[in-house]
Length: 93
Image 1 (spheres, rainbow, N blue to C red):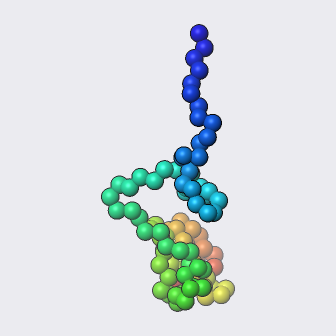
Image 2: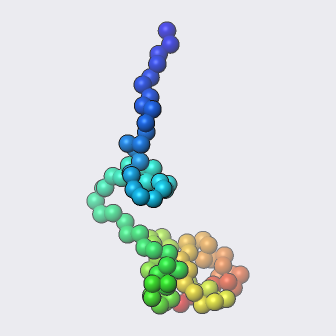
Image 3: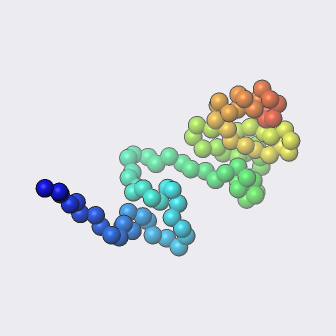
């Protein structure tokens, strides 16, 4: 005997509705376990809003560096920072 499973035709209840298109983050239901991690804007967006390059705040797991070519701030993981420091692309603030 073949069993049929119920599959709803409309899966929109899984996606948060908003005025903009659904993003990868909005495709998952949000659950809160304790304190939610801070998510800061990208370094470029922070600098465009008036933050100095040396005062940019990076998200968790990323470190602040300066691009040698233009002096702008970049947030890099430790492994990426090691490679770019060896190549001379970035420097510490």
